[in-house]
Length: 120
Image (cartoon, rainbow, N blue to C red; front, top):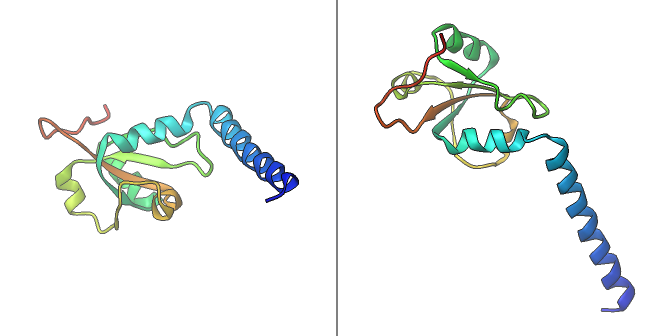
């Protein structure tokens, strides 16, 4: 490997690192809030906007953790019992294509006492 090629590779890696830093810095913590919401969830379901509105109408708590992302993600926290009745696909709890493509998510929290906080 010659010197010029090595310098070019180092500069390319530095460009990618700068881009990643800018994405994190300019998001004003949006990715961190989204990741925390996913960390607090045991299960995630890909739902549509109509189902999201229906779940919020039923009294489940909506979360703004995904609003800072582009496209914005609408998140609603639901109970395990309600999750069993959903006709929506269950997502793997990781950042993969399916999770990132979903603009509406229903999350089931890890619950100690089996309760889900409801909006007032």
